Image 1: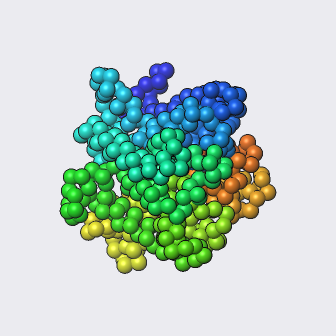
Image 2 (image 1 turned 120 degrees about the horizontal axis):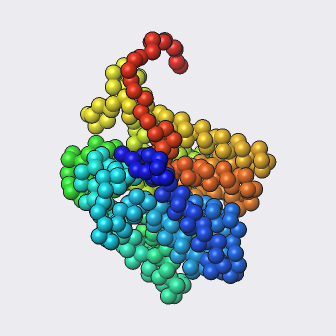
Image 3 (image 1 turned 30 degrees about the horizontal axis):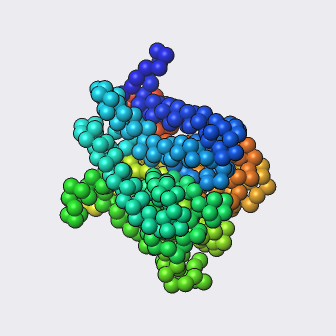
Length: 444
């Protein structure tokens, strides 16, 4: 399915990429204005572009502290970019068109299908409205749950703080406005032991990260797990494992010196936030080497397809693990929940993982060589960028223009999706009219 731009045929993948670029550029323009900064001065193009990209790509890496540099107008622009990026440009565009009474074309329906990883075009508008209802309800409930804690500490300004952090958490963005109260770039470290803030943020991150098709199954079938789509079963199982297993690891390896309640909350939050929210309740630089390695792995895995989260996705990892199990057991095809996985899906999963790993490693190498920093530290930042996480060891604001450009590219790549970018670049399918002779090669 395609459209036209200056007479050139465009695919739905290319239109999605163009939509993200357009929103980033518009956001950059707004953030450059004097009204967007507390000082009332113009913001440089590079700082505004980095912030807009991070917001639209729901990453959370920043070069300027959100609370102490940006004005209320600037923060509102950032929040709007986060909401658009979280729901998806195609979703927001279709909603605006529907509300204004315009007819949704087949091209727009195809774009929606690609944007939210739906299985078919049929019923896509109904699903889109469902997505918006889930998002707004979750963000409203999150705001109400955090409101008592923020109101008691910050008065009426706590309303804006609760709303901002609720939207940022559900969209897995990781932007915070705590800097004016607890110090620049402090995130939620002041609330490490407060369940009234930590638990709502944790639930919002998980809610946004499991994907809207999963929520569709949960609403339709409630507790009848057997009736869920196979994808939903995989996502929920993988999510449970990726929350509780890392939480146990962090509990025993990194937070032994914490008190009982704070230790449990910190361990749970540290297991959830790398996939791919970007908030932190503990200083990332104080994690052990094992803790940092675990965090990098979680950042690269990310959340579910068709969600507000990034990363290679839990389903990708599940497919690759099932394929490995099939090879070990000498099965012809990998299986998940007694369903066979086709070869094209395995190929796509392998390609995704390879691209994410190669780009994260290449980006870390470039930044390490340019800045003279350790490769491990740089890999943490690049994994955070390509996974659209936003966790940082504190080096991002000090990086040169070249290194920031690398992170911008990785954030854009991570949010729009590797395959979307590749399919946008290669706007055709090679006809399979003949096959090359079979070649044999040993692996392993």
